[in-house]
Image 1 (cartoon, rainbow, N blue to C red):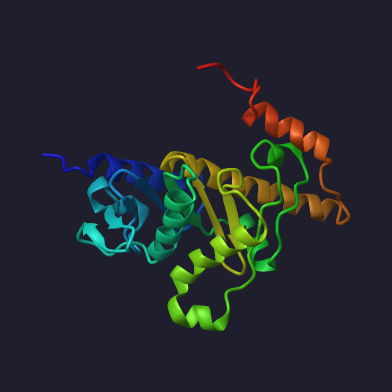
Image 2 (image 1 turned 135 degrees about the vertical axis):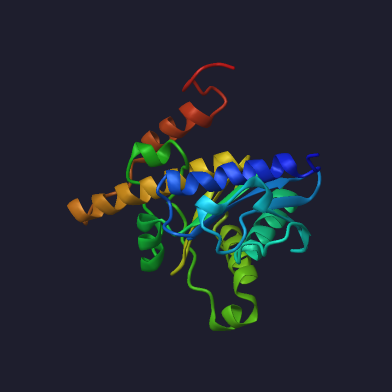
Length: 240
């Protein structure tokens, strides 16, 4: 008999299986969680388990205090970061965040290791967010020694507050020296945004290699592309 978290575990499992499918990580270098706001819990990949060995029942259910509610395996080592982002963005901030992805995808990590935000060079980027992809500074030595994964979440939240970024609109970030996080309305959308983030980073890297002096896309083109997909009079795609 399926338990009350079965659907959530299946969502997390399907999303995690998209990490190797979308070439977003080698080995076990990534995780996705799926959040149920009504229950105040999320399902997340177990730590260090290769993707081919995963099953829906191997997903771990965790509450917003970081406690394991259901599951026999240890949750991802990045679980405290997910806790912070759900608590601050979804619960306190009202952002419809139903899934979070973290990977070590090559192009995104390259920008994170350079500790550089990704400039908004073209319309592919503008179709998804209207700003450069933000990149946090390094965590401080004290933060790393205090509670590394929790402090990573706190750093992301603080960076968004400092720069006036809305997580409902800017649904991706790079952590300096570390790598990318992205989120969405559900786990599948989080994976989509993680794949978009990686592709935008790859395009931007090629852009600066071809033209180191490349300029950001003009605002009027940025606004047109973003609004036609996300604005009140959006006309991209089909009516539902």
